[in-house]
Length: 196
Image (cartoon, rainbow, N blue to C red; front, side, top):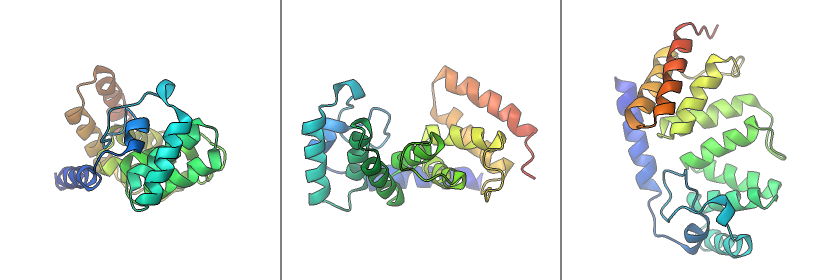
């Protein structure tokens, strides 16, 4: 129970810590799945790269501490095939505690994106931070990869009870039918999971 309370506090802290004024960068590049976006969602097909990159570069220059803007700039660089810059910006945002960036940086590593690190244990670290901050995709991805043995050899930071708490929080926070089915499958897999 204490773990669930900690999750709720972390999720509130993450969402309020980045609730900032909408910038041109947000207007041109807000990711639809970013739970902390402050502007209207911009689908990938609708990105106007020249205008959006210029706005986000200006935004980052004006407010270098703004993790959300670093993440958005990284998003744009990624889709514009500027992979090294994308990895650097997303990691910077992740290290500043932006939960969407933590999930995406882990995904960069997991998907073997150019210029991303290759250490699987970094995926575990970043996804766990993102999951504990309330990012649904990270909650599911962390548990899925753990029970599949992907993090074998890493410092497994959550025991079965901790992982079940992540899954319970997904079910509590999601009206999505398919997410709930997936959680049922992961819950069953977790019962037979042996990290040793």
